[in-house]
Amino acid sequence: HHSIINSNLNERKKGLFLTIILGIYFSILQLFEYLNAPFTITDSIYGSTFFIATGFHGIHVIIGTLFLLVCLIRLYKIHFSPYHHFGFEAAT
Image (cartoon, rainbow, N blue to C red; front, side, top):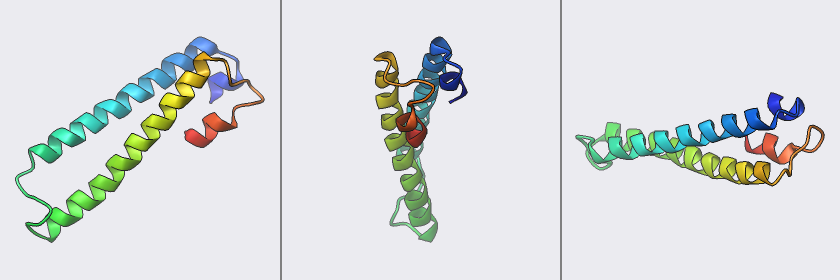
């Protein structure tokens, strides 16, 4: 956000790209954790609570990462300016 206000295009691109990479990395780690969990959603209250809570969080991260990817595409097309960047703020 600060780099948009200060018109620093390179900093905007690097920061947003890094954030997207970290979102993808987190989602991959979450999938790995699901695949290797020693319990399932039907085993106990712990299993169902774990998968529901982390599942909602995972979906939240995936949707947010997609929003940020759209923002990165718009950033490369110079759709944001210091005075016109509500779409970016809403996504972040």
